[in-house]
Image (cartoon, rainbow, N blue to C red; front, side, top):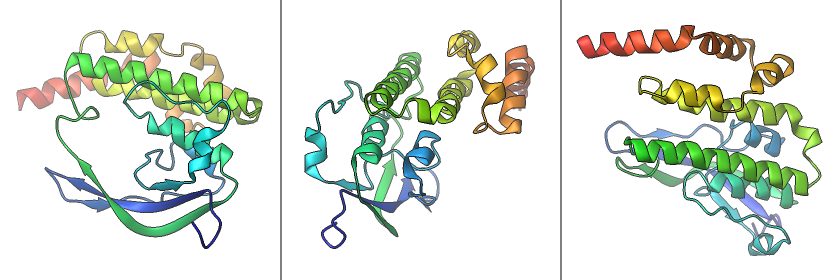
Length: 213
């Protein structure tokens, strides 16, 4: 940070799990950084970032009021506000994944909380992009981010009511997704199969057969 006069320094990290082997994260920095961050191709976690203190005192800086993936909102702001970003391509942090944490909890209350706070993160990102005058520049990335957040609900499809939640989340995507160049053809096919009910049937059947075994 001192050597390059950097406002932000990013390093790689190691994922440490309690129930499976550890592994090194994929590359944590790709330029253009904001573009890849909005598409969730690089991590929005804060654990591998060192940021200049003055950034937090920028007028209009958004401080999320929840605790699930709120660091993504900070990382978006760093990408916009930091003039100089440095990257160290070595794992200098160990990220411990613990069962029972907010991210891993599997009860109904925790799942619904994660879905709600994911939507809060999206709303904060939109606010930040508008405040920065970048909203119109990243329309394709915004559509792709909507799909990422919407599809996070698919993890809970075997549970009652979550397909309805998926359908109600960003319903405008049905039209937006067709023209979005940041969404792959495969993802578009999966979206419309899910919308038609074909993909949920596959999930239900697969879950049923797994239970039978």
